[in-house]
Image (tube, rainbow, N blue to C red; front, side, top):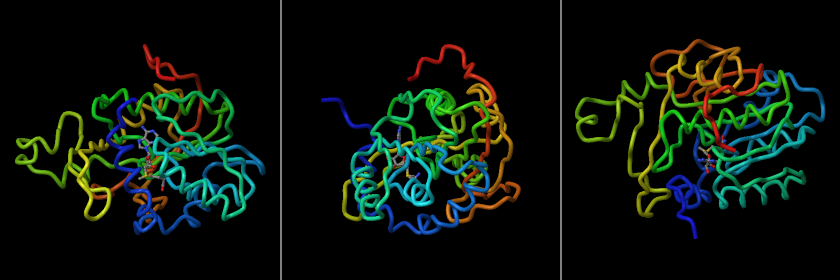
Length: 256
Ligand SMILES: C[S@@+](CC[C@H](N)C(=O)[O-])C[C@H]1O[C@@H](n2cnc3c(N)ncnc32)[C@H](O)[C@@H]1O
């Protein structure tokens, strides 16, 4: 049997508590926002990467879209499936690592929200290959000109939280902008060692470009507080709105 990745282990154990997080409480307004940005025709198809318990996927399906939700954690997906059944909607759930999926040219739009895989690094993941392979896979799955909305951790906020002591102790790496911590998935459970990567806007523009997508807007994307506002240094998350303009050109990219 293959070893579970650290994030799979974390989210499998966290699944039952996930929707207690305050940042999950704005789904309806977030979906309104997504639909304004994605410019979709009725009945369009949408891919939700790192869909978690399916809160955006299910709300999008309720509004008549054809939705695929992809996630690494079987426990998160099992909750998503139950919630979709209770809501009376169909969503195509796929269990996969976002660095490895292949769903060519199917989708009219994509979302990857609240660090849905992007920047949640496995034990051996590389700081550049992990996000780039996810973007290349998403890009390949989009029709030409289709849009994506993605939210990721903001490097400036992460850097401002850390000190040289953290660097010396290994809990923050200024070269890769990776924070390493031991995080209990729920109260009373054994902590799981996890790595989270934050990004600066210019490298995101470059990564999107390598994946064949042009960045249209960069806004404040902090979970629970999305807005069409400029970034400031303390914004927890960055929102990228981008559009597929070419095939991924990242040299040597073999993922999916
Ligand atoms: C913070 S949750 C976000 C869930 C959802 N997008 C939302 O906004 O509520 C992150 C999700 O990403 C998933 N995830 C983490 N690493 C992944 C990977 N490599 N491939 C696919 N999903 C992954 C986790 O299982 C988890 O469900």
